[in-house]
Image (cartoon, rainbow, N blue to C red; front, top):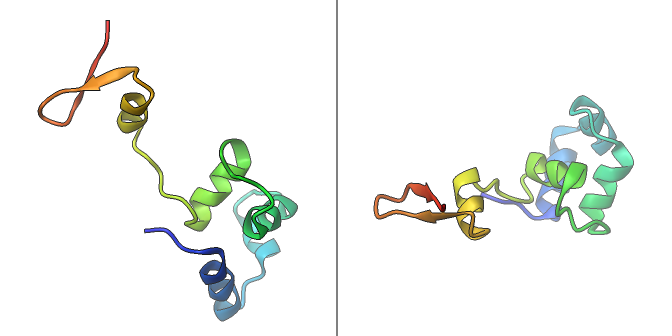
Length: 85
């Protein structure tokens, strides 16, 4: 389940937790967390992607699904993946 930035900000406010405090507690740069929440960062890789996952802005995709999407493996009939040779 993913959340919108407005929902996340409302949750911080409701819980009385500052974004900066949350960022520091999760070992993230507060400026980068603010940038992700403001939509100034696409959060496609690196720390910003990790922040988006931690906040619930994105859902993590299992590694085997990523490999299938990239064409590195092909799915078999049971839903598992089989490496391409």
